[in-house]
Image (tube, rainbow, N blue to C red; front, side, top):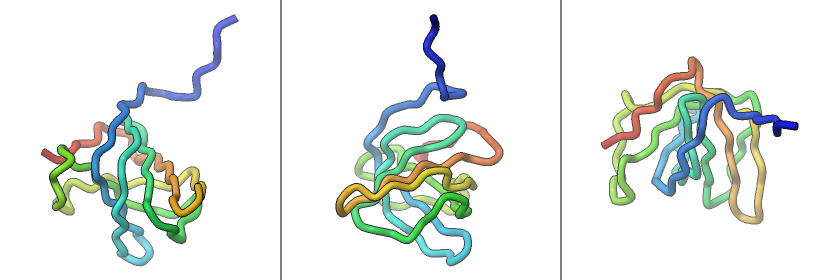
Length: 106
């Protein structure tokens, strides 16, 4: 029997800086990208934040570990589908809409 796969596209593992913007408040949150695909991204935030599934956000992932600035045009809209607090950190799963290639900023 074949295992059932939840993923619609393979994810690329990474450890790159990222930023997440809450659409409702405009607030930016610094994050670390754990993985991403054309359909979404898993981000880790180093401090507790108030986010919930269903919140609309925009996401951008840096092209290198040294890059710190990202253009607003590099941000991909999406919706938080999963949020989990792990000690002093948070993991945020975002589904992009519409699904498309996330341009990792170079």
